[in-house]
Image (cartoon, rainbow, N blue to C red):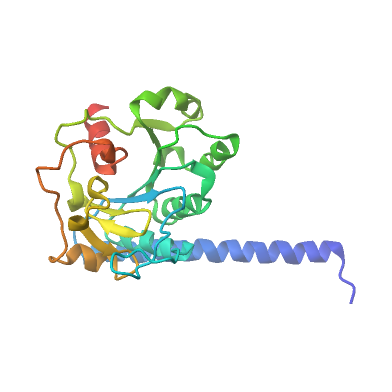
Amino acid sequence: MNVSRKKTKGITESVESDSLQLLLEFRHRVRACCEEARKVNGKPKIVYLWLCVTERGIGHGGPSGANGSGASTLALHEWLTIVDEAASMGADWLVLTLLTELGRHPDVFRIAEWAQKTHGMTIGFHLGVPTLTDAETRQLERFDRQKTRIMVRREDLDKMRHLQDLGFTIWTANPQEEGGKPDCQGPARMIYVNAKGELYTCGLVDGHPDYRMGHALERPLRAVVADPSVPHYVDESIHTVSPACDGCPSLVANFFRDNL
């Protein structure tokens, strides 16, 4: 059977149009469900979702094993579910702390894009490696400038001036001097997930067994946050500003809210 090129093109465009419409409708329904969850559960408690990305990637250890250090890798759809859960709890910020090059793991952009386009989240890219390739810059240009923040340490701000020229807002990842008390709400307003998919009260105590809250795949985030048997605080004796606080969404957002 012969099908003309014009007809084939028309069919292809129709399929692509239908797929795009389905995606847009799905995003709308997901956002509506999250809004309904916020209404049912009253005033939002969680504001920030903070994820850490290393050279190995994001969520490269599954929940198996005594300390949650399995060999499996969290799939993209599992990360999108975590974003959806956090959004349903009121989170309107997603901060990605990258301890490696921004473009090393493409799923980072997919997760951020889903958070912003589906849930209207403000995205913070905290760059531990404060250099960008042209390809990485082009990826960033896909994001809403009004709802995107680029964060680097104070001494690296000049390296990001070209992004400022493109309309991005550049924030200092370490606005407070080290050694002082962090100006943040800590775990009361935040969900922190490290590069193994493990939940901790905040990035300051990442890896400290006394502050481990479980693994992102073990049970729903809402159940973890509501569980009184897991730690929901950081002891005052160690709750001081250090490089581990770099990019902390609560601390950084508080600083720029009060100083703009």
